[in-house]
Image (cartoon, rainbow, N blue to C red; front, side, top):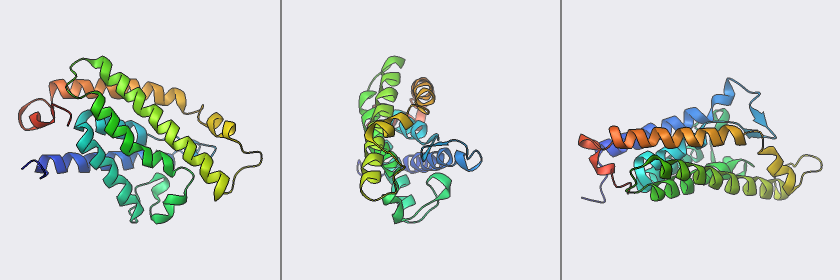
Length: 198
């Protein structure tokens, strides 16, 4: 049945939940990778890969399970944090953006066979992450979080300059990796149902 998840789909969703969680916690071993309260992590990279490789439907499921798992208390977020209090973190918007980014990435590459749409999709996913995350951060500091002295909307975007080169490079890497996997591995055998990117 179409509405039922296959075992391999559940496995892939679980795999990406774990990968996003691993990407979130790189700063626990390199705490200096935090600029302006924003952890420089690989969460976005894996969230985008989820959409590119699994397609929009499963990509949304993977990123949603990651978010819900963290909110119910599993230590999935950056610095192994979890719990409903994360909703009030200035950085929660970046987590929320993963769902939209995975969905859009999956839709863009649906039925695409060349690498270019994959790279474009990854760049679009990165842009979604920045727009949603940065605006949430600004709103949070404006309303409930303790803002740094002289904080402004411009300052919020200035903080994003530091991770931007890394995220652009990773977007290209994600596009290339996802394209290779879709055309050489995921289009074979039991993974064939992922071909359309649905």
